[in-house]
Each structure stands twice: as structure tokens, then as C-alpha cells.
Length: 108
Image 1 (cartoon, rainbow, N blue to C red):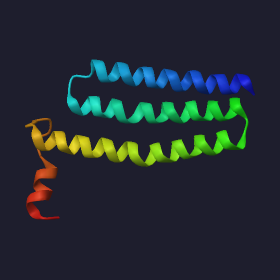
Image 2: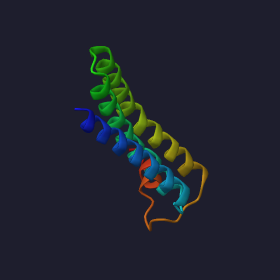
Image 3: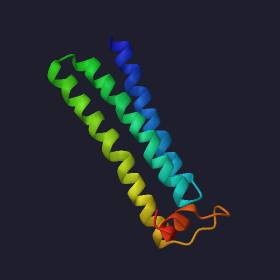
Image 4: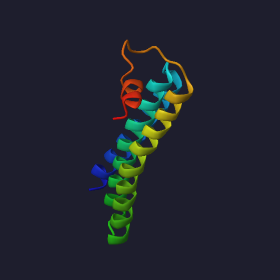
């Protein structure tokens, strides 16, 4: 059981490291936001699973479960709001059609 827990901990640390590298090396703010949102979420989930398997107590499992649930709820929402704020503050010509501006101007 300790080997499996260790694998989850190493996997989680590797995912968080990859996310950090992605944030540092990405060329646009949107790619950086994507790197900062996806991999750390999976990394923290893996670390929480490894922690729950290592400690082997009900309190540790419940705490790890609550951390994962809160992260799954707040991580994507926070990333979406931050990306939307960046979109409103900058002019970007990434796509030929700006669907968000079109939707906001039509009122839908």
C-alpha cells in the first residue's frame, strides 16, 4: 500500500512541476492560464490520494476528500474568471471570430 501511495505522491508532484514549467514557458497568457488550471488540479488530487493512503485514518481521508472537492469547484471557476478579466483588459487577435464579444453585444 505504501508503494501505491508513493506513486500517487510522485505523480502529483510531477504534475505540479509540469504545470510550473508550462506557466514559465508558455507564450501567451491564455496558454499560461491553461497550464495553471489543469495540471495542478490533477496534481493535488494525486497528492491527496497518496496522503490518504499513507496516513490511513478516517480523518485524513475526509480532509483529503474535502480538499479535492473544494479544489475541483474553485479551481476552474477562478481560472475562468481570471481569464475573462484578462480578455476584457487586453486586445488579442488569436481567432478570426471573437465569439465572446459577439455574444455580449447580442445580449445572450
